[in-house]
Length: 167
Image 1 (cartoon, rainbow, N blue to C red):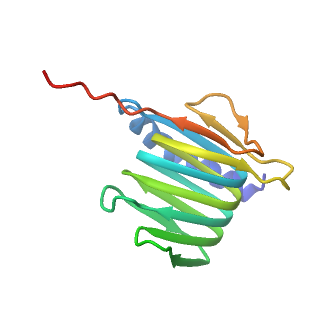
Image 2 (cartoon, one colour):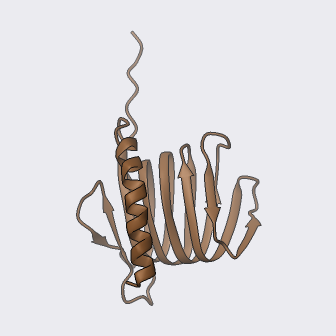
């Protein structure tokens, strides 16, 4: 791990841990962490926050319900609109992103060095790059780190509370 990446990871941890701990107290919230992933990742959140970075690749951001939170991306070399109004495509190196609540979908395509923490409720699809020696790792709810497989794996984090019917 380069010194720059180590410093960024430590800085992100110092800044993000208090927010993650505070956010994790909502009923049903879980945590998904990915580190140094090489491949394709799609994370779809029904609520929560996400923060992280990608060394290089393409990030396709979908904000299906505008105004229910914010999605912020910086550092991309190229940005263009997607086919729908709620989609934006970012590409390049050293891309940083943050989701501050609401519904979202983030797709990392041919990602290199994808690191993020998602707190809330959602699903992720993880597929390691077949040409990578190390595809990276993921962990759910602070559990042990698991290697990202070369065949797509679906994982969930958190769970929406079941509504109680009114009397």
